Image (cartoon, helix red, strand yellow):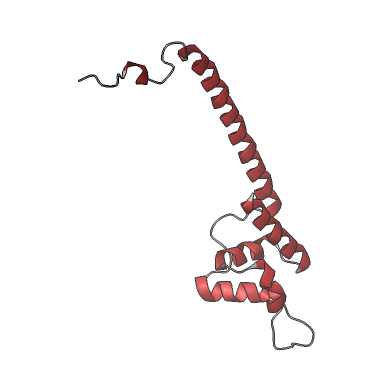
Amino acid sequence: MCMAKNLEQWLAAKKQFNLNDDQIAMARELGLNPKKFGKLDNHDQESWKMPLPQFIEHIYFKRFKREVPLTPVLSIEQQLKEQKVKVLKKKKQKAGKRAEQAKSGSDSSSEAPLGGWSTFRIGSP
């Protein structure tokens, strides 16, 4: 759940600094840390700083020479939902495989209890 925790940090930063989905995608692509946005944010005492949304757009354009990300931007909420669906799907597949192995394992357990090692003899040439 490390990825979900990371997305939750981005969601909190989105709410705290009034960023939209495009700006969050840009910041993630740039490799910015959502915990450090407080340093980058413009406070009224620091008139030389840009507001954070404009700063992200500015450095994104400066680095990638484009205004918006090329990939379609999903909101963080949508990403969390998709991730939960993916995890549940994996769990169902895993449970199905376990049930199948348990079913087939009980049938083959009478044939070779040691998995083929039953024919091995100690001391035979």
